[in-house]
Length: 202
Image 1 (cartoon, rainbow, N blue to C red):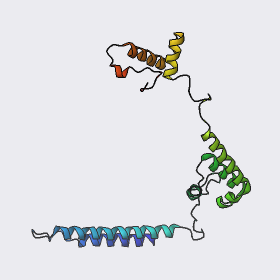
Image 2: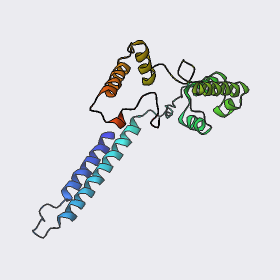
Image 3: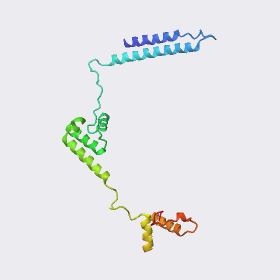
Image 4: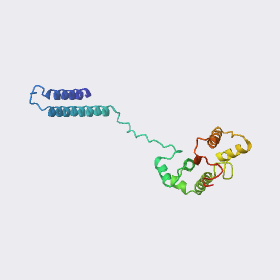
């Protein structure tokens, strides 16, 4: 029976192909209209073909089988989705260690991000992390206390004049040599020969 319906559909397709008039072409033929007409015929044939193939697939399916449900992706419980990250960003929580903390709490307790932010442990831990970051940012990076470091040009020049030793640092040594050359040079104008220990007024 299926073969008869398929044969009938094939005959209909062949009949439609026979209906296309190719012998009626004249020099006054509107080629745009002919192209639109051919596209329309081709579209109708495609539609008929897809409907016929869908009917065949439906007939081939066993009727006892329930329809398949789409597979839902289960999000990884350890990672927050984009909405949660945007929410945290709006709340001012942008640091990686804070986000990791909240991810862990959400994964362990099953709470939402909003509930986790209301938790006293999370609040105190976020405050501790923030305070630690502020202290780290406020702490100077140098290990020496005091205003001047030992590697400035003026100190290196003074050390050279008192002991006759150049600094160990190559760049600073080059600057000291250049400065000494500039002081003793006769080609350098007087206004550029400033004493390194005095300001320009004295």
